[in-house]
Length: 162
Figure (cartoon, rainbow, N blue to C red):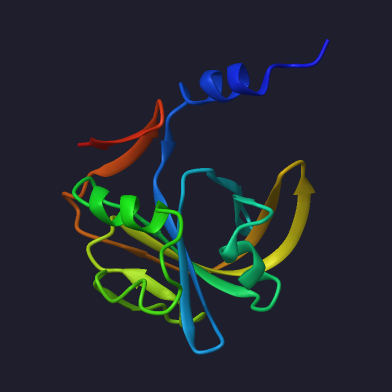
C-alpha cells in the first residue's frame, strides 16, 4: 500500500533539523538557499551530505560549480532563513540584504554572524526521488561566536535554540 505523501511530510516535520544556508558562486552571481537537511557523514575524511530538491535553482548551480559553502545559522538569524527560503526571490541581489563574507576555498558567501561555516567540494551527487543528495568533501571549517545558539526547523517552522 503506498504511503500518503502528506502524512509522511507531517511525520518528518516532527524531526528537528538544523537550519543552514548553502551558497555557491556561478556566472558572477551568488546563489543561496535555506537548507535544513544536512548531516555529517564522516569525520575521516570529513564529509557532509545535503539534501536538495532536484528542481531547485541551487541544485542547478551545483551542476556547474563543484565548490560551495554552508553557513550554520545562529539563533537570531531566522529572518535570513525565511528570506532565502522564499520562493521567487531574485538570483541577482538576493544576498544584498544579507551581510556576508567570502569562504576561503570556494569563494561562496558565508553569512556573517552564523554559528559555524563549512566550505566544501562536491564529491558525489546521488539521485533520491524528488531530491538529490550532495556529498561534499570539507575543505575548511570555521566557528562563530562561542555564545551563538542555533536555528532548528520543526513542524514547518524555524525556532531558535540556545
